[in-house]
Length: 250
Ligand code: 13P
Image (cartoon, rainbow, N blue to C red):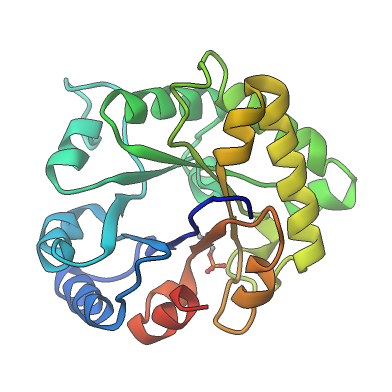
C-alpha cells in the first residue's frame, strides 16, 4: 500500500437524530484510539456541530455528506463549504451514488463541488461506481473512466493533493453483496492508473482509494490486504460504534 495512510470513513446517510448521532459519536470517541489510521464520520447536517463538540479532542474527524458549490447566496436549502468548515468538517463526500440516483447529481455538478471543497480546504471524497446493469454489460471501466475524467476535469495535480476517491459499486451498497477483494483490487488499480494517466505518477501513488459497499468487520481485513485498497467508506456498519470500531481496528 506504499505509504498511504488508511482512511476508514463512516457515512451515516439519513440516519440518526441529533441526540442519537451525538451518543454514537461519544461512544466511538471512547472506543477509538488509533494513530495509524485516519477515521472520519459524516452525520447529517444538523448533527455536525454537536458531534464536532464531542469528537474534537479525539482522533475521529468530521465530514459532511454533500455541499453546494457557491460561497453564499439565495440558494434555499443548500450549504456552502465555509459553513461546513465552520461546523468543524475536514472532509466532504461528493457525488455519492444516492445523490446521483435520487437528486440529479452528475459529473458536471460533482466537478463544481470538488472545486468548491478544495477552495475552502475541505478534503473531497469523490465517489464513483457502476450499477449492476453496467457491470453485467461490461461497462464498468467506461463508466469509471467517464466519472473520473469529467469529475476531475480542469484540475492540476497540485490542487488534488488531498483528494480521496471512493469506489462504491452501486450493486454492493446496502445489499450485503460485497465486491470480492479481487474485484475491488482490479477496479482500484484501474482508478489509480487513470489518475496516473491524467495527473502523473506522484498523485497516483499518493491518492487514497477507498472501497465502499457492504463493508463489515468480517470482510475489512481481506479488502485492506489488497495493494490498492487504502481504506473504506462504510454505510450501515458505521452506525453502531462498536461495529464500526471493529472495522477501524481491522
Ligand atoms: P453500505 O456499507 O451500507 O453498503 O453503504 C455503503 C455506502 O454507500 C457508503 O457511502
